Length: 386
Ligand SMILES: Cc1ncc(COP(=O)(O)O)c(C=O)c1O
Image (spheres, rainbow, N blue to C red):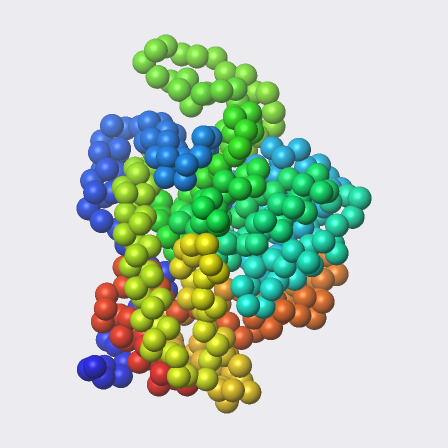
C-alpha cells in the first residue's frame, strides 16, 4: 500500500455523488421554466413510494418539515408528550417543539445506539401520545418492542428515517412500520436532492393533510393553479407552512433513486474495508448488523476512549483534519446543548449511555463518492493518528 502520509486535497465528509443524468434533468427543468412544485416532484414521490413498497408519499423541502407535519397529522397537541432519543440530530427534537408538544428523552442501547424500548417504557405518562424512534446510522430500531409499547398505550409511531432509506427490519422497510416514516435528502445523505425530505404514511388522509399543510394550508393541488387548464381558485383551510419540494430538487431525486442500491453496495464495501483495517486498533468499531435486518451503512463511527488510546476524542478529530480527512460527530447527545438544558432542565448525566457515545464518537467518511484511494487515505490517517 503506497504511504501517502497526507493527501494533497481535503476529503470533504459526506460529499455527495452527483452524476450527469441529474445535471441534465435539472437543466431540462430550468428550460421548461417550471421550477417550483410540479411533475418532477410528483414522479419522485411515486418512484420513492414504489422503492419503499408504500402506498402514500409526500415530498417536502426537508426531513425536519416531514417530522413536523407528521406530528401535526398524528393529531398531537400542545401539552402532549413525544418520546424520542438523545442520540439524534437536533431536528428530531426541534420538530416536536415546533408542533407545540413536549419532547421526552429515553436513553439508548449502548451497542446499537438506538432508543432502548425498556427506557421508553419508563418514560410513558398519561400525556404520552407518540414515540419517535431514529434508525441511527441506518441500523433499524427494535421495532417489534416499540410497536408493542405503542399498541399497549395507544401511541402513534413516527419513524425518523433520515439515515435509513435502505434499512429493513424483519422483511419490512424502515418508514413503513410505524404510522409515518420521514426521510432526508440533505447533501450528506444516502441519496440527495440538496435539501429535501419525504413522508410515507399508512393512511391516505394523513398524506393529504401533510401535502396541504406543506403548501400554506391551501386546498388540494393548489400548485396547479397557474396551469394551462385555466386559473383555479384555491381555499386556505388551515394555517400551513411553506415546506413544498421544488421540481429542481425532484429532478435530482429521480435519478439519485435509480442508484440507491448501487450506492448502498459501495458503502457496504467501504464499511467492510474499515472493519478489516481497524480490527487490531484500540478503538470500538460499529456493532455488526442484527440478524434479519438490513443496515443502511449511513455512518461509520468509531469510539475513541481516552483510557484505551491515550488520545482525547477531540484531539483525534484535529489529527484527522490535519491529515486532510473530514470527520464528523454524530452526535453530541441532545442534553449537551444549552437550549435544552435551559428550557427542559436536561442534564447529559441523566442519559449516560448517549452522553458517553456523544463524547467518544467519530464518524469517518463513507459516502458512495469515495474512491478506493480515498478509503486508503482514511485508513492511513486513522492508523497514524492513533
Ligand atoms: C436523524 C436526523 N433527523 C432529522 C434530520 C433533518 O433532516 P433535514 O436536514 O432533511 O431536515 C437529520 C439531518 O441531518 C438527521 O440526521
